[in-house]
Every structure is written in C-alpha cells, then in structure tokens.
Image 1 (cartoon, one colour):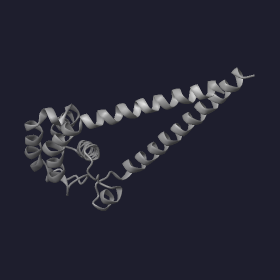
Image 2: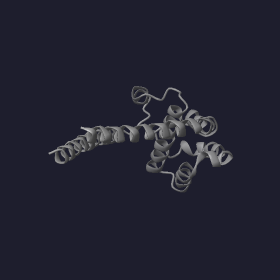
Image 3: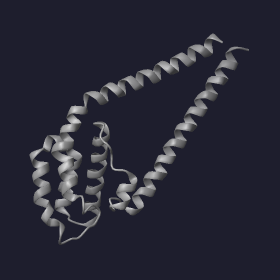
Image 4: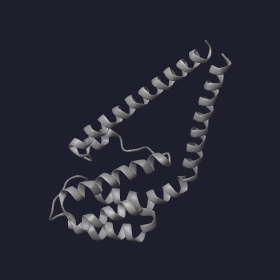
Length: 171
C-alpha cells in the first residue's frame, strides 16, 4: 500500500512541478508578448483583416510595402518565422505563399491574445469572416482529436502499468 502511495505522490509532484514551471514562464513573457502583439501582429491583423485567405494576384501587392514597414521596423519582435514567410511571399507572390503567411499571422495573433489574457478570435468569428483555409480546419480538428486520444491512451497505460507494478511487488 505504501508503494502505491509513493507512486501517486511522485506523479502528483511531477504534475505540480510542470504546472508551476508553465505558469511562471507564461507570466514572465506577458510583457514581451504584449509588445509583439501591439507592434507587429495587431497592425498586420488590422491591415489584412478583410483580405485573409482571399488571394488576388493584382490587388495585394499594394500591401507589400505596408507589411514590410511593420515587419522591418519591429524585426526583433516579429521573429524569424514571420520574417522568412514574408520573404518567401515577396519572392513568389502566389496563393500558396499568401495563405501560408495568413496562417502564421492568425495563429500567432491568437496565441499572443491568449497569452496576455485577451479574448481570442473564436472559430465562429473566423468562419463568419472567412478567416480560414477550407481544408485546414478539418486537419486541425482531426489533429486535436488525435492528440486527445493519444493522451488518454498514455494515461490509461500508465495507470495500468502502475497497477501491474503494484500487484507484482505486493504478492
């Protein structure tokens, strides 16, 4: 019986350590995330709000200088992923590159909103305003389900393993 209690306490302490680390790391990045949101992602969101995932080869090059100014003035805050995606977009102005850039901007925008405690763009809002790739959401939903099922699978077999260990050592 003491062995089972020690396993349970070890598991609980590991979870508490992981949660505490995550909580304090998130708190320490809040100011930086707010700065990234205000200087890079919110201006990009406002600029592209009516044009996400709606590609027009002749209309959108007018956005290039505006996007470039936002990213260049805040290069350090923008990060390499956004910067390299923008470079790819400038080199090859096509629908695939534009949608990839939209994916990055919307994903980071939502993550930054969440990290600073502001409301995120809901699924309903994004669907209503056509801020999505049609097939991309089915992929995200299915990958979420796979992760959830995977976690349940891991927890179940961890619990099963702990029971087997307990019964083996207490016979």
